[in-house]
Image (cartoon, rainbow, N blue to C red; front, side, top):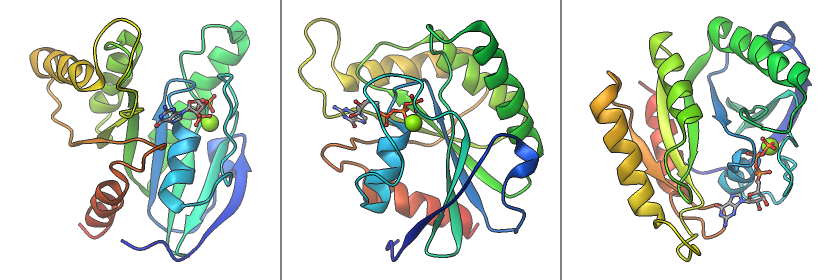
Length: 200
Ligand code: GTP
Ligand code: MG
């Protein structure tokens, strides 16, 4: 699972504007600020190919990155940004849902879950929605390096709580990987996982 090259291809405001070739792709989805763009940069070892920010709401379009000239990583706008205007929230729903329901080349969604906070209802709702629409998910827990939290639980405890809720309430059993874009934890495992899914 070696990265030989990555190039930014295009930003699309609508699902129907996405690249039309038949290369397989993985969508990176999760709450605003969960670390989607950072994960892309960490995976491909490029500092700022995907733009990141401390402020949520940085990524606003569907961004296609072509890896090794053979498959795509797709950076998406985050959901659940409380301060977004109502119009922007609605917009997220319509265009990303349109993308998920019509993208035939989508291999799986990497659903990013912030391991430094307790389980969030919006993430569970999102997993449930994808599951109901038969879209394959991999849970990618982010920020697992954040071992010192002022109060509350450690990342491994938050992950355990999240898995427990899924196990008790949902019919889905997605694979999961612990990552950190700061330490590089989980990078090789995730690249290998994606190569296995592509060849399946
Ligand atoms: P939107 O585009 O706004 O939806 O956000 P995003 O999910 O793309 O998040 P982004 O990658 O821009 O990162 C948000 C913030 O979290 C930045 O300040 C990052 O430096 C930080 N961050 C991302 N990943 C990690 C991680 O693994 N560990 C730590 N400690 N911080 C991280
Ligand atoms: Mg982003």
